[in-house]
Length: 321
Image 1 (cartoon, rainbow, N blue to C red):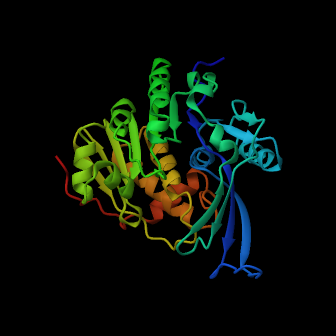
Image 2 (cartoon, helix red, strand yellow):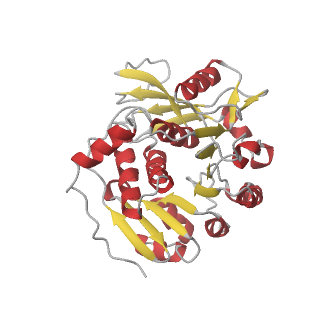
Image 3 (cartoon, rainbow, N blue to C red):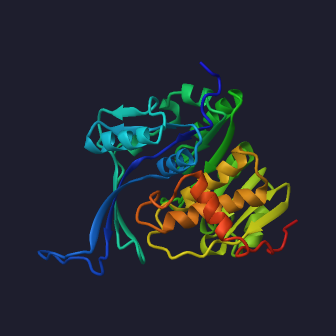
C-alpha cells in the first residue's frame, strides 16, 4: 500500500441538510405553511470540505460516523460518486444519521438540528490508518475543554505519521471560547476561523488586533471575513484578497468551501495570494446555489470563474507586523 495514497484525509461531521426555501413565516400550532421548495443535500463541515476537494481532482478519504439508515447510505453513495474513500467511516449502532433543517436560507437562517451519529465522532475512537496514509489531514469538531486533550494527542500522532494538518475551529455553541485554542493554533500547520470566531476567542473588538494576537501563536493563520474577503498571515506577513461579488442564494457551507479552495491551492503548490483566490472562489460558488456544495464545479470550472473575475479583486489591506 502506498504510504501516502490520499492527498487529504478529512475528519468530522457528515449529515443531511433539509433546506426549506421560501419560508417567510413559521406555522403556529395547528397551522400548515406552504413554502417554495424543500431540498435535500449533504451537509457537515468536514463532508462539504471533502466533496469540494474531490470535485477539484484531489484524492480524498473521509473519517467519521454515519447511521445505518437510508440517509447514511445516501451519503456513502454520494461520496463514492466523487471517488471519496469511505472505508474508514464507522456505522453507528446507536444513532441515526444527523439531520439539520435549514429554514429560510435566503435571509436570516434558522436551524433545527439532530446531531445523530455526528455526536459519536471522537478522536480517540477513529481509525488511525486513514491519517497514516494521508499527506494532509483536515480536522473539525472542536468542543473546547470537552475534547481539547484528545485533539492535542491526535495532532501529535498525525505529525508522527508525517502529515501536515489544517484545523477549522468552528462556532462554539457552548459559549466557553476556551483559551486552549491557542495551543491548538501553535500545533497545527494551518488554522482556519471566521472573523466573529476570532473576535470571541481573542476578546478583541477589532479584527486587526485579533489577527495580531493570534499570529503570535499560529504558524499559518487564515481568517475568513465573508463578503469582505479573507486574510492569511504567515510569520507576521499578511496577504489579503477581497471577495468575489456574486448573488447569494444559500450561505450554508461557504466557510468550509473556502477552506477546500484554500487547501487545494496549498496542496498544489500555489502562492498565498492564489490560495486565497481559490478559497474565495469556492466560497462564492458555494453560495450561488442551494446546498453547501452544489454550486462548486470541477477544477476547470473554478479556474474559469477566477479567470473571468480577473481585475475585480483587491489586495490592499494594510500589512500587520
